[in-house]
Length: 305
Length: 302
Image (cartoon, rainbow over all chains, first blue to last red; front, side, top):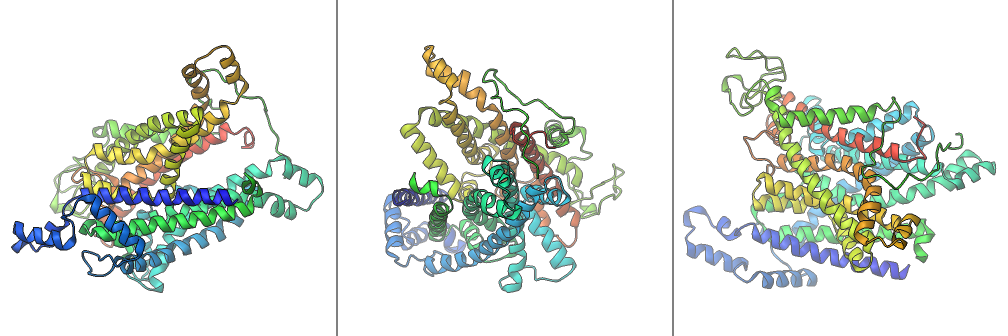
């Protein structure tokens, strides 16, 4: 288990490094921010050059990379080009807001999907099963931005129950609803198919033939095994949820990571883009490690191998 | 709950190049409907002129945001799905939009499949360091929100079709590599591979005659799911205005336009989203029904 964990940890570090290089190179290849930041009327070549020196983008790319990574590692305050604020503040705030959405959607997804998926699998072909499958199919196929727009159109514009955009408790409901719809659909589908697979296995048949009550069979023998892929998927889905948030947040003007990153990309605010992507990678890696630990707890075979 | 009845426990024969699963039961509606739907969208993409009633890029400012069923003010056919903020015919734009989605999604899928299957075969069959490196890259792809890379990339290289296909293809190879590698890993330990090797078969022959044919079915399943997912990625980028550029009609950018006029023209919000959902749904159903066909433990329970 120790070895397994160390291995996963190193892998996470490599992921973070690769993501940082790729994003850094892409972002820098996308154009000169200095030219954009100098007001058009006094954009002389000299003024632009001065701006480059001020931003530090006149240095070679690898120097910029190492000074950025060094600063990031030491926790130095690297300033956003735009906000004149340390990126850790800008991105940190945004990440917390995104985690509110992602966490809410994750909890709702698991709470709904595990019991409903199990029931659907146990009553295969019933009305419940059909409904569950329809939800799963819709959640797998509808684009998140479309669902967000439909919710907004109906609940905010037509019924006027909830605000259209902004930040606050009421404002969080629609984005969380959008994301949890997809989370629920995905986990439902997985839970149902895993459960179907597990209840057809020999050990479940054995448990039944021992005369155990159906509840014990399902809860003790089937659910635990069916839950392993769910835990993995829920963990992996964190990256999926961040992905969903990136697209959904700008629609609701919810100032999370997605909103800040997409804006920073269009404004060519390099430190925020790279710092944001990097922090997202760190976050995802940490969560994945936690999932691995939990995975080891659920499935003792992992611990020994 | 009765004990699962297994109809057949016999191993599928390892021979045959394209072991496409046959349609077993007449009740397999999902398969037929989804395959049919994909064919319809292919038809839209190849020959949009046949079904569209207007040029999708022609403005008609006298007819902005008219609801479905409005008569044309110049004596043309009825705009039966209404018009958008430039007075363009919604139905015609939707039909032409299939071209963008199918081109980017389909070619991206093809690119992803070729790269992914090759990587998966090498990784699974060779094992060792090739396998380790390939799987590490796969893990990285799976653990990081690719949309961030895609957004930076799409806004950087510009957004012509070629770079969009590349962006989408780079997302697409991962699942193919994973499934092919897994299959190759288990198949290479089978007796018939050992037998082929004992008979002096070369590695290349083993891979192409024994391993690849046995991975075709799972690859088809993945292709079903991935088609939908890649089309969603294209639509998302177009929605963020960094995908297909106007005036070329694309479902994602139609929704992006609609966003600004949401409370005036609900039909511009509803229909493009429905088209995206339909095509993604068709891909998922295709994957699902293929999967059900291929899994003997679930077979025969309708």
